[in-house]
Structures are given as C-alpha cells and as structure tokens.
Amino acid sequence: MNSDRISESERVRREIRAGRISGTSRGLAPGFVQCNLAILPKAYAFDFLLYCERNSRACPVLEVTEPGDPVPRRLAPAADLRTDCARYAVFIDGLRQPDRTDIAELWRDDLVAFLIGSGITFDDALERAGVPTDRDRWVLRTTQPTEPAGPFRGDLIVTMRYLTPAQAITATQITARFPQNHGAPIHIGDPAAIGADLDEPLFGGPVPPLPDHLIPVFWACGVTPQSAAENAKLPLFIAHAPAHSFVTDLPADRLMV
Image (cartoon, rainbow, N blue to C red):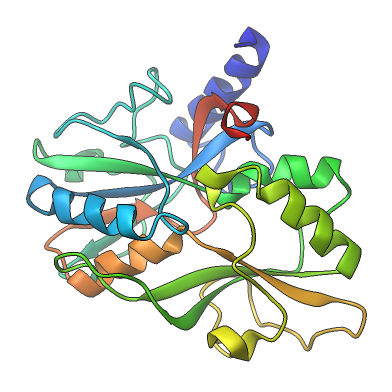
C-alpha cells in the first residue's frame, strides 16, 4: 500500500480522536474504504452475523473483532473503535440515547464489533466519473422485508439519489464493481414500487419534488442492520451515527471487481 495514502487515513482518525473532526465522514480520506459500525454483546453476535449473511447487499461484513477487542486488526490495526468515529449512536433496550463522541466508558469485555461496507466508499469513484455525491441523497425506509435471523428483523433501508439518466447509468456501472460496499442499485424509478418513505427520511433532510430531468436511484443501505438491531431491543447496541462512518486503511480499489 502507498504509505502517503495510509498516513491520510490514519491522520483522519487521529483528528477524529482528538475532537478536531466532528462532522460527517463524507469526503474524508478519499480512496479509502469506509465502514458502518455495529457493536453488540457476544451473546447476540452469531445471530447478527447470520442476519448480515442473509442480507448481504445491505450488510456486507468486512471484519468482525474478537470479543472485548476494540481494534479492527485487519482493516486498521492502529485504530481504536471506541474513539475513532466522530459520532456514535447508542441504544439501550432499543431506545436511542444521546449520541457520544467516544464510547470508552461503555466498552465491555463481551462486546463484538462488526465493520460493514459503506456506500460512502465509492463516492470518490463516482465523483471522478462525473457523478455528484454531495447533494440530492437521502436515507429512507422501505416496505421490502429483510430475511430475519434470531431477534434481528425489519424492512430494508435504502439510500436514494436523484441523478440524470446518464449519471444513473454511470453510477450503476461503477457501484456494481463494489459488491462489498452494497454494489449496484437495487431499484431505479418509482419510489412507490419499493415502498420508499419519502415523507419521513431517516437522514438527508426533507425530500423535494423530483425535478423533471432527474430519476431516483436506490442502493441498499448499511443503516439496515442498525434498524434490525433496534428492533431486537438489545440491552446495549452501539453504531456509528448516520454519515459518521469509520475510516479504514484499506484502499477502496482493493475491493473493486
């Protein structure tokens, strides 16, 4: 790996750990894989892994840590998952608590961390191909059920982008090369066909009316396993806050096919 590129991913995590970066991870360390984070007690880890395997488009697992180990030794061996996301969402018995900027005091010896591929990873490739990624993007619930496993169940969450027809073709071609970061779109066109809820987006602000020259394009989203874990009402579940993904040392090109 290129040492300069590696140092950039490490630099970003150091800045996050020091509190100097507190916003979204979009645009940070371009060219590196970013991951959704899910942390839960070992007692639920097998069922969660099974849920991810059964719903791999939304939940492509890239690494699972040993119980109690906060270091993702394959993807970022110098990192600390307790401090290196800018913002964490914490759930107790399925209820969201105030977000945190670190989770060191919540850490336990039985916690297992899952690093799940994020669509933010292919933003750099899309931008280089002329597909804008800094606007017209929302995270939405759908009525498409996922396949349950143990206590984990729920409907598919998607990321919707408004694109021109030409951009949609380019985006489909590019993202299909990133199967471990959700891959190609799961749907293009009428949101009602998948029951996408435009009235209450989970992230991205109000959805404006669709301009005549654009079409909606939908990708499976890594918020899906987070939603399933919320539905399971675990005694403790920790995730990255939306758009505050974990930056790894793995170049995105390594995951391209």
